[in-house]
View 1 (cartoon, rainbow, N blue to C red):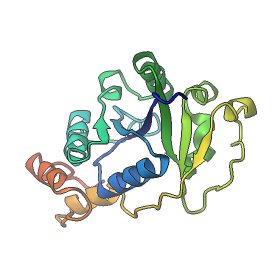
View 2: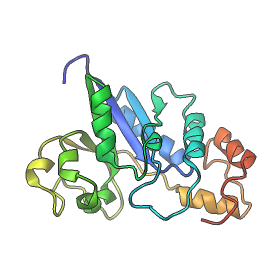
View 3: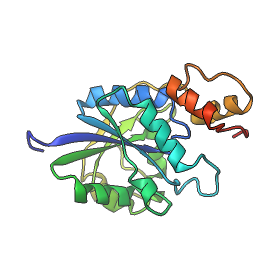
Length: 207
């Protein structure tokens, strides 16, 4: 990596809706890694959530844009929602490499995902495309062992950065359930996101 290389932390997810936990995690990881940018990338449909109802991608992207508006290091991308679902991280990384020269991409994932990596689309090739920035999760591994069914050479191809970023105990499921029950969500999501959810009457049915 050269001195002029931009360091971008890729934060993908359904963001249904984005909440303060996402923002706190992104800010802490950005600071810890001295990243130039955190790119929030809502998925059109996660390959692990096919068949599960979620808010339209346009709403989820709009909420992300509202949530990050005050942080100059945060950006939002519509890359995954403009391509046919499901959203494969491998395809996303290929497109980013084709359009972003002089960029070091770090993929932000939770340690709980390590046991599932073998099921990711083209995982061994994916590991050559981005460094992994791994968030600690209770009960998940904290040592850089090669996950089961992953090619050791692919696992060794790029650095794995084990973060000290603390977890924030908020979930999108919890937010959706509170909305469906008519309970307040102040403090769980940014005010602009709360107003957006109310205006468009999102999440009226229990998740």
